[in-house]
Length: 189
Image 1: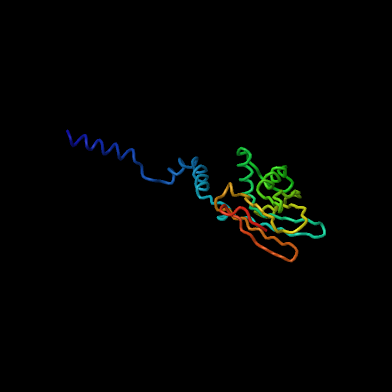
Image 2: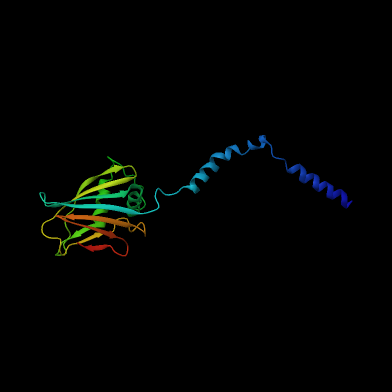
């Protein structure tokens, strides 16, 4: 009697486990798009592994102002704008409606103070797309010497701990390069 039950159980198990066949693949086809999307989602890598911006500040003696261009990775800028506006999704591109948001963000993160510790006026000129980066253009009216002036550049530092903002300053015949990071957000010019 015991032997009969054992054989009966083995036969039931063998009937429930079917060998693989090409026709059994068709039962998985409805799940194929889900599987493919999951695979792509989990294998996605960011566009770049480093977080850096490059700023050029060049003094124009005829207009008595600094002409400033800031190059930022577009996806990083979009993330910063989203974080500063209650997670609203931003897509930055030419001819969008985001200039006022970009301008506000840059005014808070990029500040030149004169020797009397007064913030210099920043004129936002605009932005322009270039492949995976956005160029932001500013003009800063400036008279006098750089002695006692300080520059703050904390762009994207609230988003990325490893953010580095390289700033090249050309004033008359003098050229200097400054690296801004979380441990060094101000530099005396």
